[in-house]
Length: 338
Image 1 (tube, rainbow, N blue to C red):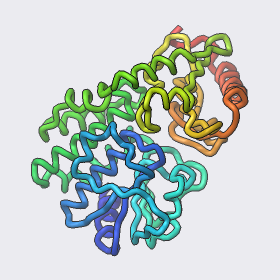
Image 2 (tube, one colour; image 1 turned 135 degrees about the horizontal axis):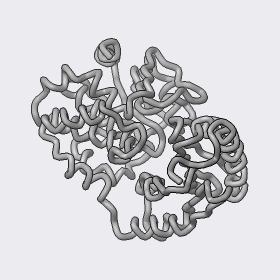
Image 3 (cartoon, helix red, strand yellow; image 1 turned 180 degrees about the vertical axis):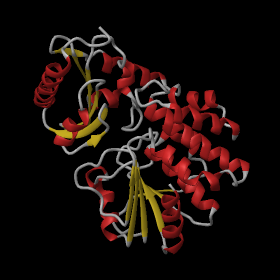
Image 4 (spheres, one colour; image 1 turned 90 degrees about the vertical axis):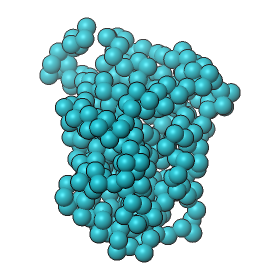
């Protein structure tokens, strides 16, 4: 952590220009960790815009009033790129070009190493931490506690949002003593945790609730009801006025179902192009996602697959059945929750 802090500061000070970015379709960890680091660097006299694909980031309005966001254009070039919550070139979209043009690249992530790892000067990856925001908190703590109260509080809200996102409000299996200790520390900085929870998780518009309901209505159970598939398509998103980044954590609506071992949610982003979210308390879904160029964690991972919905579901189900068969051969088929 000491070395990570030194790299962040030294590389940022030495670079002629600095930019931050996370993966495509930014979530509450990658984007909010970027916001936290941007404010931290600003307090050190270093300006670092966050490079995004577009400004459809409505769900983060409570944190972006003073943020410097730049929409990616091909002519952009920066001396140092800091990538957060992502270690694969495949997950950067068009912005991967900025990596190739940068003089230095720093990667900070808590996911397993994925395909096509980002070329870098320095990389810090530690999957034991629940979020990239937690990594920043630990690495920069001695500096953050000396910041002005308003800056410290802003960073606290960003870090807490990363925890909310990646622990699903402290209910996922990755929730541990560390996140509770950090949460308590953030409260000492003035954070009102219930307010952040409401802003992030209870900020639903009526049309978004309708979209969630329509998605849940697509639930299909296979393999003796052990695997749950659900999906949303472009038409569903359009008639509910949804942006790509609006629906978050769709799998959280079905997690914890007593007789389900694997959850698969497919969201159509472009015609016959689906973003896939995989969740399981049993099998290694990261291995399945990696097969399709994605990645993440053993129990929660994702990827993007092109093709017809039926064909994608068939292919994924074959992979899942193979993984479940292997699991059953080791531990038996009876779920601890059954």
